[in-house]
Structures are given as C-alpha cells and as structure tokens.
Length: 101
Image (cartoon, rainbow, N blue to C red; front, side, top):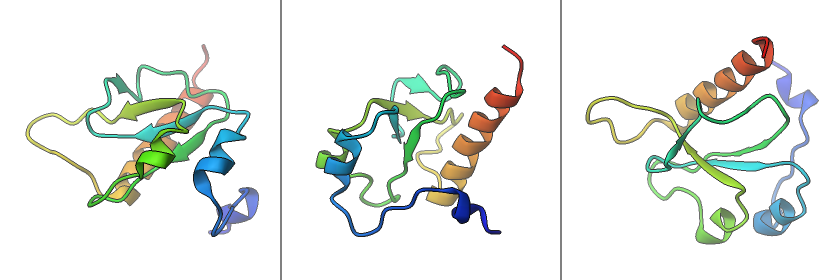
C-alpha cells in the first residue's frame, strides 16, 4: 500500500511522445520477444510497459520501446494476466538489484 506515492505517474498523456523523451531504457513485455527478463541487466532504472492480454500495446507505443522482453513460460502457456506479468518482472528487477554482481 502506498507504493504509488514513490512513483512518477502520468495520466491521460501522449504515451509515445512521453516515452520518446525518456532518458532511461523503456522495456515492453511481449510473449514472443527473443530476450528473456533473465537475460537483461535490470539493476539500473527502467520504464516498464505492460499491455493487456487482448490487445497488447499499440504500434505507436511499441515504436518508442528500447527493448522487448519476455517471461519464460514452459509448456503451452501463451499469456499471463497483466498483474501477474508486472509482479514477475518487478520481482526479477528487485532480485537482480539485491544480488551482488
């Protein structure tokens, strides 16, 4: 509770334009991305983008992404709930930040 008070939140903005001005990497989760969240360095700050299960992210938003990443899922699982996806990615980022290099 209250974690949102520590975040910079932008509402009802032109997301592709905002992302284009970002000075930190912009990561988007996509099921077919070739790079896994375990293969990238998540120690530095980054922007996370999570699309919904039905439509995903818009092409304009994807155009502003620095890197597309996936969550490894064995078997025939094709997608995750967006809240579960965000939790896994944020957990991996914290895990990497707390693990000595």
